[in-house]
Image (tube, rainbow, N blue to C red):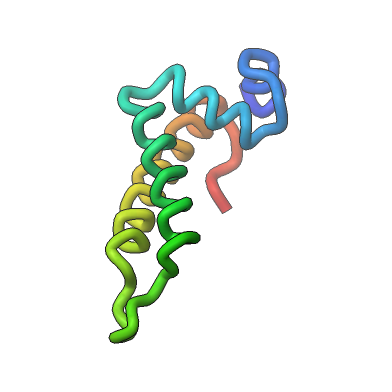
Length: 86
């Protein structure tokens, strides 16, 4: 299997198909992707760095959730025999 099989099942460009597969095939996939989108919006609104030079709470949360989503993407890529993430 590979990108072709993943796109046949979930349609769209490869990243969209991977996100659909995460939502459908992995436990808490939808919640993780929704949280990542929410915190991305918060980081855009609040910024990445506080006045004291420390990262904002939204940036810290986004980074942690992004790590979870990257692990989920890696699992889908492994299931479908695709190349690993970058």
